[in-house]
Image 1 (cartoon, helix red, strand yellow):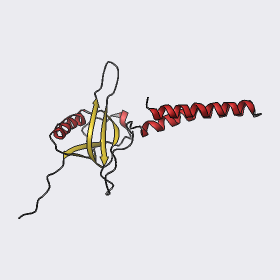
Image 2 (tube, one colour):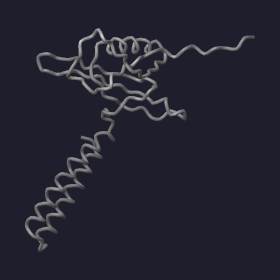
Image 3 (tube, rainbow, N blue to C red):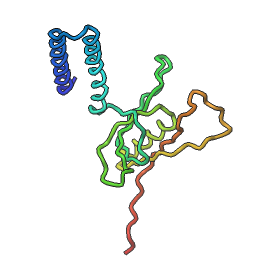
Image 4 (cartoon, rainbow, N blue to C red):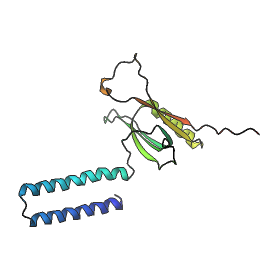
Length: 171
């Protein structure tokens, strides 16, 4: 546990102790006191979820349209434990048109196709080739059977490619 989380935890314990002391000394109805205690407890969990994203945990938000790939970690599906698998990408959004922001971690569903593309991309990165990515909408294929577990889901494909060589002017 990091120091900031420990300090935050101690601050909330102190706050809860102050709220409890104030409630004991107050003449509020017992129902109002119970609601205040439940709300204070709920605030602990809500704040903890918010701090996860601030500490660099992967965000479950939409991937940017264009991004610079920094790294990836693939957790393959496991039939024994029932884990569906996941892919974590560290990428910088390049779609804003301005200076690049700080990298962010994104959590994606596992797919064999993306896993293979990321293996190739990491190999290229080890060789010094910058890897970019883009998100494209998947075309609906009528010959494939419908997957009723994914109705209403936006089907998108993530493509990883190498940064093209710069075009040098002629001499």
